[in-house]
Length: 382
Image 1 (cartoon, helix red, strand yellow):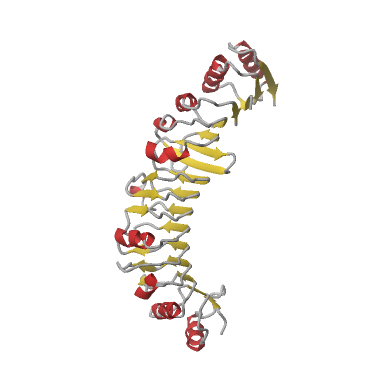
Image 2 (image 1 turned 60 degrees about the vertical axis):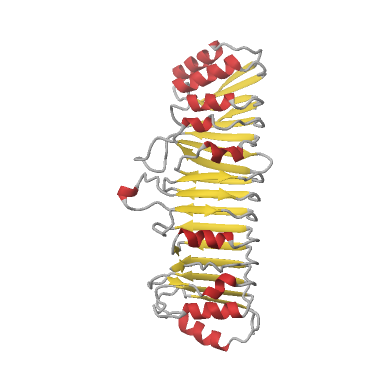
């Protein structure tokens, strides 16, 4: 009569599969309502195990939470049609060897949390049908594997508040740098967005006025439409370097966006300098920069021109530069800031160099730079 059941394989590989116990115990289970059913099977499970029958049984008993993880050697199984119209299901977690063949009659009226990991989809229509038929869905996690039969993944859920999307890159060397496939997001209630995508596809977003937190780690190239939802940020942390994901990939820049009040963090890879000029930042007041590589001046200047009320800049607020080495691009930027910041009151440079003679030269260069303000310049040695 217990309302919550969990079956999972033993960590001891010498034990036989839990499947035999699952079948026997579910045959004797008499609870009229099943609050939760969790099944995790691995390669020890017989490939002819009728998992589908027990999922249908759980639906008949008004299951609220279903967790199904199939890491077995059998082919992906489809799910009973009754699951897609289960009125009591609030949370659904599907993982690995499962085929999502979603019927047109799908309607999950109570589903609030949905987790999809490493599945196969019959086609793109199945993915769209499933998400569009969850009217109260608030939390969605999608972890896609290679060759899951979906090229363009569309997330259009008006009620969605939290989205975690990840997609792994192919191990095939010939697929590296492939920019096929796309992610489309249209979620007006979305507050938290996390994207981890190393496949080199593309992404577009629209209608996201409620964003609070964002973390994006990708190698695709966001366009202006994707960046617009982030134009209201007040604090920007920016790391400009070449791509560290794949040495054969195109040269890219890395961005960290941080909204102070909303604790927004965004990590985004892009090879297009235009992304720095694509979005106007009317509320940006704090800018933190880590210039880890060369060729970062041009995109940075474009960004500064689009930040009319910027007040504080911190390098790796006043103006403070930590680990200043006096490299060419660093000198260019320091010259630009000191020569164009009319309201700057204080600037501090911390020189990072082991050579005493070179440190002295760097200090002299800084002190000789032209300043349009009466700012106090402080040069320190680490």
